[in-house]
Image: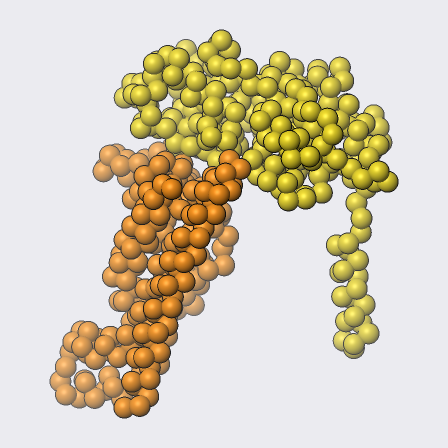
Length: 250
Length: 224
C-alpha cells in the first residue's frame, strides 16, 4: 500500500466518526428503556425525525450532562436528578413528571400465590435484590415498603444492591437472589416477559415514584432545538401516555 | 470518610495475592520447564483474563455462582455457601481475574535464569524440589515481588467483576472502586474524590517501594 492509499483510508475513517448527527439524543433512565423503544418507534413514524437512546442510571446521566454530554432530552427515573440539572442551569424549564412508577416484588422460582413481603423475613429467602436506594428511586421505595411493614431490621442482612434497576432484574432473573423489588415496567417488557412471577406492591406503602423529564438547553441556532422540543412535548401527548400505561406506569 | 471499603479492598487484594502465589509457583515452574503437549492451550486459558472484558468474566461468574445453575447449586448443597454476593465469591473471582498477573512474571523470571544453575544443582545430587525452593526461587526474587505486587494492584483496581457479582453490600462486597462509583452516581463528588485520592496515593507508594527494592536487588546482582 502506498502512502496516498493509507492516508485516504485514514481520512475516510476520520470522516466516519466526525459526521454531525441530526438525531435527537435522549438520555434514558434504565427503567424506561423498554417503553422508550416503543415511544421512539411511534415518534419516528409520526414526525419523520430520528431518535437515539442512550441508556444509563439517572445518576450517571446527570453527571454526564453536568460535564457537557451532547444530550437533547433527559428522561429520568425520578425528579431529584433532573432538578439537580435544572438548579445547575442545564435547562430553562423545571422538570415535568411524565409518569408514576409502580413497584413490584419479583421472583424467578416462587409462584404468585406464595409471594408476599412477609415471606422475605422467612428462611426460604436468603438474598433479596433491590436497586441501590441511595441512587435509584425504586430502591428507595423498596426500603420504604420494608420499613412500613417492620421488616427492614430483620431482612437488612439479606439485601443485595443492584447498581441500577436493570442489574437488579438480572440478579432476580438469574436466581442469584430468591426475590427482589423492581419496576413493573421492566417485568412487563417484552424482553422480560414470562421470566418468573411477580406481585404488585400496594402503592400506599411507598411515596409516589415521580419520573420526570427535562428538555436540555440548546444554543439559539442549534439545528436540534426545534426537534428536541417536539419530542419533549410528545412525551406528554396522549399517544405516549397510552404507551406508558401499557408498561404499568400511571 | 468511611474507611470500610478501603480496608475491604486491601483485605481482598492480600488474600487473593497469597492464594495466587501458592498456586502460581508450581504452575509457573510447570510452564517454564515442563514438557507436555497442548502448552498453547494452557497458556491461552491462563492469559484469557488479560484480554477478556471484566464484564464477560463477571457475567459468567454470576451465572456460575447462582444457585439456579449446577455449579452454584452444588456449592450451596455441599458447603451451604452462596458464592454470589459473598466475600469468598469475590476472592475466587479475583483469583481467576488476576491469574496471569501472577503466573507470567514468575514464569519469565524462572526462564531467564541460566540453565547451568539448575544443572549444577542436579549434578550435586539435589532433588528437583530442593533445587526449585533453594536455588531457583531465591534467584528470581525480583520476578516474584513484581508478580505479587502486580496481582495486588490489579485486584485493588478490580471493578467490573465486583460490580457484576458483588451486590454492593457494605463490609462484604462494597470495595473501594465500587464505593467511588456509587458516590459519583449519588453526585457526592467530594466523597468520591477522597476515596480516589487515598487509592491513588497508596498504589503509588506501593509501586514506588517495589521498584526501589527491585532496582536495588538488580544492582546488587549486576555489581557482584
